[in-house]
Image (cartoon, rainbow, N blue to C red; front, side, top):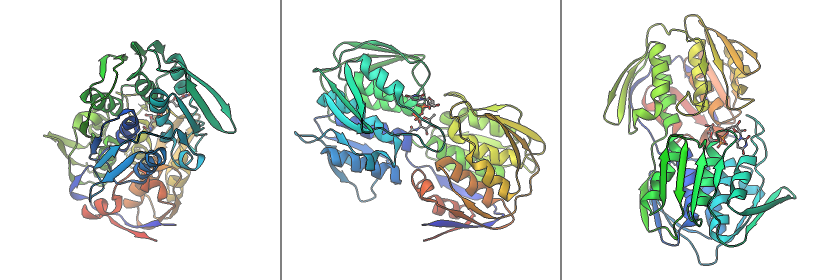
Length: 419
Ligand code: UD1
């Protein structure tokens, strides 16, 4: 199993280019199942989750031609598509559930493995199923599979989500896009990746309008041939912004819209970072002394992203005083804490709140990755630790960060991969 060897502490300086967004690419790729005409998707990140989604589409019958750099995919669906998503494909990536809405809408049936829980929480799909049921999907759960069918075309309806969910909002939008009549979704997730999906669908002829958290979808009969470039990855941009703040860095982070991390950049300014916004880029320099922040709380967009929580925690470990971070989205998302403690962190957890005593002197150690974002926090911590660290099980990082080690090496981090 691959591991990272990191020798710290490192100085950060230079430029980094942000890749396409994994979490925007996954629903857009799932949405291609709704098309009879060819679709070209550009700016895909070269990460494992995207390969998994492309393999899932291939297994359903889509013909996919990738460009040489593998960042552009031309996708054309077959006349006789399959509607079965196996356990082996779904278990490696919960995002596979996003094909349910398109399959039921386009082919009126689907058999998809239940995604199950994961380390950061139970992560049920009950809101996805309830929303699609309201559009006319019937389903049962048998032998770990969702068996779904509908009598002909789905029908528009009014759906109020009990709680904001990114995935359930996406599945409902994908189900409603070609449904008969109007669907009104209330309490819809407004994450930039959800808006990127509706921008893509509207470009292809869908009729989707937003008003606050209400999303109104007039069903259309078909979608037209389209080319679309996926938005850049806001979590990758946020992660590099934390890296620069943490390591007294001087970094130009380019190829993304700074508005998508405005909340996180405000926090970094509070911590002492100097940030200048340019056209599709930022210049960020880290302070001599990092200031602590009381009451960081993860929330749905436009709040602090839960996917940035672990990276911010590393930053607060180096702050000059006490901070707190409350995790409001996932019940078990402090997996990185035990590993950070092995480097010397002083963190106490009470339910969903972490109390962090700052001024930590991190000393390199052997570490274990647990999930995608927890793993990147360990990379950040190792980067500013005294001496050598080894990060095991980095396949988690390969799921979602494109060329992480070469991007970090280019800006001064001593990191290498050991096979
Ligand atoms: C997506 C992102 C993930 C991010 C998360 C929150 C992708 C592939 N993943 O995950 O990186 O951390 O949004 O921004 O885009 N819930 C239910 N029932 C459901 C659905 C969700 O109870 O049917 C709960 C979840 O357990 C969680 C909360 O709702 O506590 C929010 O989850 P959700 O927004 O759905 O996250 P994902 O779409 O899974």
